Image (cartoon, rainbow, N blue to C red; front, side, top):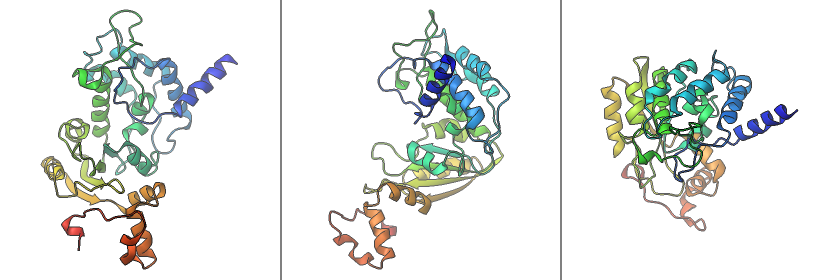
Length: 305
């Protein structure tokens, strides 16, 4: 009975997964990380992404051992990407053609759009990403080999244990991609351009794609009711097109796809853009600026009519 209660608790913790960690508080390794890891592993094997992604042959304890060995009893700032290679190899999955999605700065929206692998498959849908998504971990030279008090942030050192993991996982994921791949980026962030060569996509994913990829389809999204800073063919997206075509891939870029706008408007139906769609549907588009509390944001020349 106690074992059953422990398993149920672990699976409940699994349901709380939200995003890859970008550490900001120097918290230590997640408590009971082994139980969380193996609980997610059993859950994934039995219930997750069936008929979308193949199961892996390795057992959950074997996967944990390879993951643990990669960073434990080591300095938290001296973990190479290659340390995780044995784990990546054990957790290898064949990815469906034309369904791989990368993302940058739009974790929540990209995963809503991917819909847990039904529309697209993200790194976090694979077992490699799923097992440790949102967890914190780092090692120490003394027993127990794991630091539960404080782990460095990614910016503290170049070979931080979890950053090295996600860098290697991203490259591994990209190597498995085939056909047309999709990248979703944020065109509304005033602090970060939509594409950066130093981003995970620019540094690890795009360079790792094989000849099995033939096209990169970019979806540029914009936050509702916020200024639109970058569009296809402008700003950093010019650099993105250059980098993609240099790799020999076709490049396609799309601003605010209708399907993505539907998702955004489902959450924020009173936003300017969503009210505009309603007004257009009712034949009252000319009156949209008169709606209470709404104003028209500046639009690019090509949209200003």
